[in-house]
Image 1: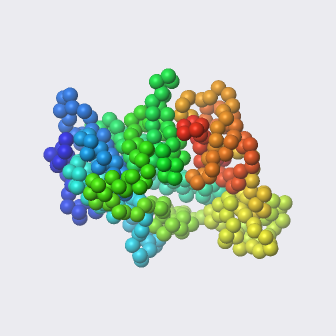
Image 2: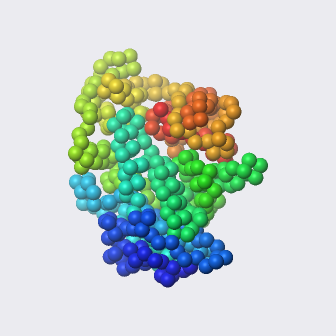
Image 3: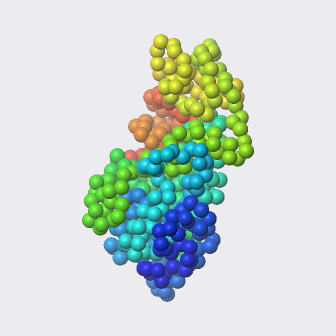
Length: 410
């Protein structure tokens, strides 16, 4: 199953760099339904599709599995055409951003080093529909979205698994720091935090379904980042020393406001709101804002007002186009509701669930009671007031190392 003989589609073979680079930014990346299935001998173990982003983590996953003698296929997802919105591009080379053309090149180098089949799969349409447009819409509606979670839910662990099955693989493996286990008593698959708490990414994976968990491997879940680097160097992975990505993949300069404005302009649309009032929680007008999409709950800098004390964004009143600000104490709340809840250990709990709840990635999980309102909505009641509970962010529920589920804050 190794080498070029296993690959049928000429657009996705280990071609010269020029062809693969073009595929990363144009129409040459294969659409999922254009990739022909691999020919698997009767009785042979089906290969595992490794999601290769070009970073050290996913590359090390491929190297580990290859060293173990597992049959693997490298899949790199082309998610966003980096040539779109050229007015947003910086004159400097993009640094520390995932899913760039350079990352596709790096993934190809790793696949060539390991001598495994390698495909670049074009998911641009799915990514724009399920990640870009909701990202823009959420900001325009006064919410603060998490595009990485949307991508996990609707592209990486959805479309990628479908594609993997189409080409003959029955599982996918990724470089996420998390763990999956099967509970024989309940028959369900469970999502667990990574052993390395500093690298745990379970917060971004709360939306995975039972089918996705059942067919996903996280080989790095019990390793630290230093151990991963050491393994990468030992196995001579070409990207062993590559820095971690930090920015949102489709926002080249990290300026999401410019991206939203540029994207709407490309679509022939204009921002639906003008400047409006900045008001205190009591309704007193303190100044003017220049568009609610420029602000997020908890923000302090860039408000353009001077009250002689720190002021923070408390809420975005979309209906009245008002930016509501207040003191730090006014930023705290004890309850919120979440929508599109995904429960993992069970379909839906029978009563109130006691758990620790994380309301953003680096938030210390807080004690709370979660009351299901129906199958997909719930009310969270925190024991202690929490700072900056932000609509559009995820609230993820934990019991020890186990992820019970999560949903989107209303």
